[in-house]
Length: 342
Image (cartoon, rainbow, N blue to C red; front, side, top):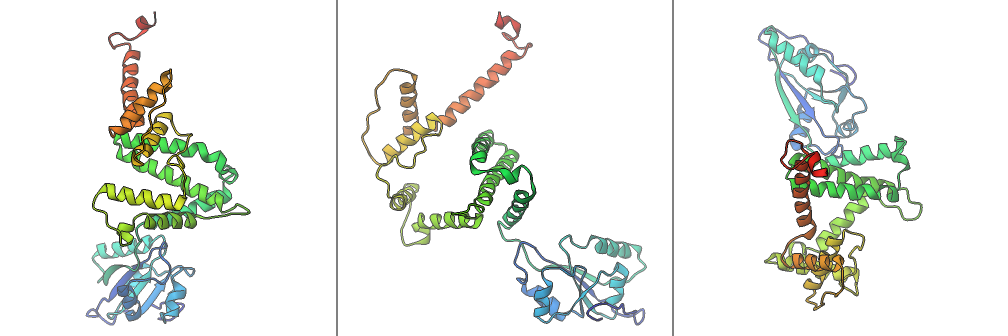
């Protein structure tokens, strides 16, 4: 068998060994050439290595390692014939796999008229955890370049979607819907990747998704000295103390209120301020005033002190209220219908 054409070898006789076919699969999400040791062993020991895709990203690395690869797409019968006499043929699968070839081999095996070679599926490389994020970055890059809507978006124009997606994620969490949770997490992730892709185009201070990921990795390491350093933390309170201390050192803030976004919902804002005050062990009396705003402030502070998220508590109560409204709108429900409107 040569570099360009895997000439099929006829079987020497009925007693000839059927040989072996190794279907080698690789992941496009792993750098080419990073193959497992069993894969390299199979490639070096093979009598022939075939690949239907001449542009397969692994081919340059295989040839650099001294592996002769024939760029050809044999039929199932040709591949079986090439294994005659106990030969081993490795097929480097394309990105789509080799469905036509494997289907053909299955038909030959099912016919009962062909002595089939041993067939082995050998994964040469595996996706690492998080590898599908590479697909997301690639898809987002193409959408940004080719989509008439996405190509015109800005950070400012997308801001409202980030808020909406965050609220939908919270709703999925509170509803306990696992399917919705997975989908909403994806929508939030899309916002991160979309904004990062837009940021690459800034004329003065561009950054990429790698810069974003690198920044949060560095931050997590700094703020977990009990894991990545010599500090000790035995309780969640110890961990929070480490976090707040390193955060204060990084931000060089002059007030515990620094970094609290004032644009967040009112109950969440009040609870966050109360949390900062409590954590800093400050004695700050609540401001006195007339009106519902001061009453809500007091309720939010009380909820935070009791370990209750006032926003979540109000949403839970609002959902009960919504169900009551729906029940009242149902004409078949007692007390509902047109009679209530009169």
